[in-house]
Length: 114
Length: 109
Image (cartoon, rainbow over all chains, first blue to last red; front, side, top):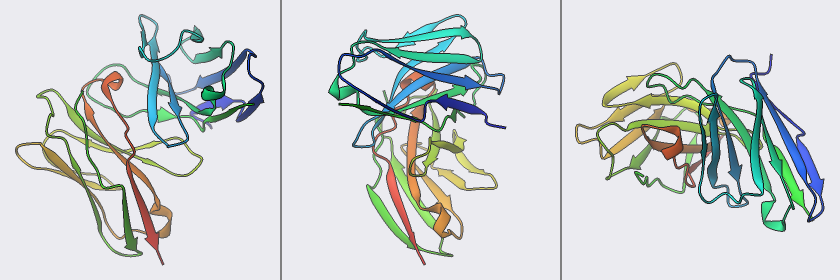
């Protein structure tokens, strides 16, 4: 039983294309996130989202947009892909309440823009 | 945003206890200290969190001095499978977490 799943695992595409990465969690969590891990292995939060609020990291270009059809899904859509978008993208989820800072991460999607 | 400082890398041998220290001089009153582990080609995995003193679970212990300006993750009797990157995070909100470069632990046979 996969807690947080992402598709696809690998994505190779050309500059200028539009692509989406899907994420699903079966943990019943109410908050989901997208992270980007670059070639230097720095992991940066891009978005956090629950039913009530979308919080966007200010450094994220508006070409990136999260879409949440329901609590269990948070997809990441990327327009006009650029070379610098090449990275591993991780989806994560957690409970929004309490003082637990335990996030569950997906396996990652390696995006390569050529 | 509380900045953290960790050693870039550490080497150990199987069976040894490993202590990874993290400095967070600007920790705020409401901030918790959280540690994650990341294996190659996988997402990070939560290890432990604490606010003060000592916290222990089945995987690790976390030691936090009274001033909370640093913390030490202790891994008892490491094995080869503990080779990973370990991240120290400080904050009271996931949106404030900064993973940084972490500490790359290399466990040797």
